[in-house]
Image (cartoon, rainbow, N blue to C red):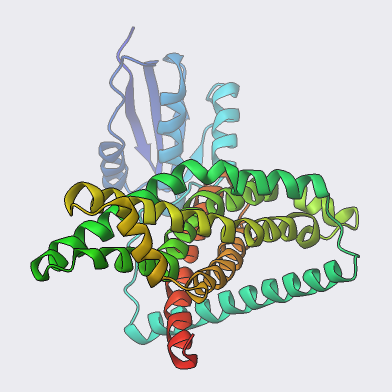
Length: 375
């Protein structure tokens, strides 16, 4: 292959003529465009004619060179005549010039002031609060339609979701609740053993599981397991435009998709909470029998004397509230999901975070309310 060159052969009366020589192809060194610009500046020409009589083979390297040369000539008011070039090269250059070059995406971000960031955060919080309240209002209207027998959803879907939320979660609830009971008993045993009051480990574990830990740990498990699943399912439907199809058919997505999921969690979370309470008590029993030399009968009698029906009711009421919060968080994130695949993952993450935060806040509020009313 012949070496590619760009030669200025003559420059008379501000008119320059340049010859393109050699093979402008992969493997040959293309003339430096900056060097060409400097030579054109030295001649101070107003017109530039390109001659391709000595041009051999060429590929996109020639088109790219001509593109940069044409841009330079436009910036410096130089008339560029390329009629002598091959027609194919002129066509490719015309197509390349028809579309503007994208600017680099790595732009320097301008630092905004604290007041501006605070204002944007406030507007975002206000917008999200409006969306959340609107969604809660639609769910309440859907629940009202359910009480009148006008809600449109399939009972088969409700049973399937209840199966996924209830029996499907027994394994993880068993493991976590048993370990929580073991931890509570072990921590309490280390302190109560100093005073010779090992028997009160049963009180600690029973009351802790029945009033607080049973409902909270079960709800957190369901937020990470079921809440994220709800968000992913509804988010995938949003991406595939299935929710839009339901609206087109005149079917309310809240009735058909959100309501059965909320009912399933409200029904199953209290049952899982009771199951978690007994698993936690069983974990405390294992520690007491193995480490504290208590008999199984002593532990069970002490647990029975320490617990009342109100203790289980407090946990059950909390679990019902937690079920509503987990379902709302998961369904809200799914219904507000974007139209891309990455938005589905973001929706699942947002559902878990919102669910756990709302559970902790609601538990604190309910605990204070119980203390005030003496329940």
